[in-house]
Each structure stands twice: as C-alpha cells, then as structure tokens.
Amino acid sequence: MALDALQIIAYLYGREVAERLRGRDVKIERNKAGRIRYVYVDGKLAFVLRNNDGYLLPTIYGAQFLDRGVAISGEVPEYIKQGRNVPAKYVRDVSGQARPNGEVAVTDPAGAVIAVGRLLYSRRELTLGRGYAVKVRESLKGASAKRTEPPQ
Image (tube, rainbow, N blue to C red):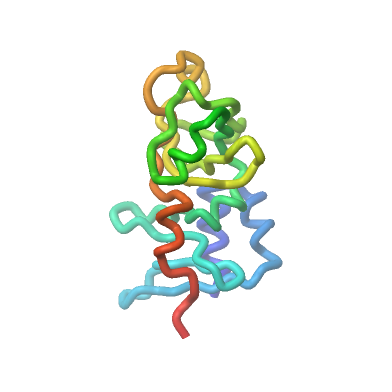
C-alpha cells in the first residue's frame, strides 16, 4: 500500500529520501477517488498532495527527511517561525540538491527545521542578496494548529 507513495517520493525528492522512509511506519490516506491525499510517517503527517498537479509537498515533519535545504543565519529565524518569507541576504548555505521552484527545508543556525517552502532563486542568483529566497508555505507557528494524527 505505502509502496506507491514511496515511489512518488523517490521520484520527486530522490531515492535516498525514500530509503530513509522505508524502515518506518508509512500510512496513506486516500480521497474518495482512491488517490493519495496524505502520507503519514510514524503516525505524523509528513506529506500532503497538492491537488492541481499531484505533487507531494512536505510538512515540517516531512522536511526533516529531505536532502534539500536552506540554512539561514542571524536574527531572522524568529520571524521565519512566524511564517514570513526568507530574505536572500540571510541565506548562509543552500544544499546541492536544492533547485529553483523546488521544495526546501529552512533550518536555523542550530540545524533545526523551522519552516518549509519553495526556493525562488538558483544558487547563483542568491549570491546577489536581494529579494526573498524562500516563499514559506508552513512554519513552526502554523504547524501546531494542523492535524498530525491519521484518522482511526
């Protein structure tokens, strides 16, 4: 059952991410048409299906399994935890797997995931230090209000 979700995750985020999830308890919630809607890992919501294109988007918990990330520096983590976008001038490092318009985990200087969102620029464009680097889709503040357990 969970094999099809792992195959989609391997396609979107890489085989390494699917291998990390293989030993865990992966459950899928489907909609009325039988399509994947939510993917739970160890009882926590990890991926949500975007309706318009079928892309599995990671939640804060699911972003912990990704290899694609943006590390930030300075005093900006408190603002990002509130759901604000990441300014390019505070980006300290971008992982090699991160691609423009792809989903990335945003980590604070300690390495903890504080948000997840879409990387807006390439690595080279980020060196300019202008504009927003990541459009935050979910942050720590917003994550606590959402459902985390699969329905019984």
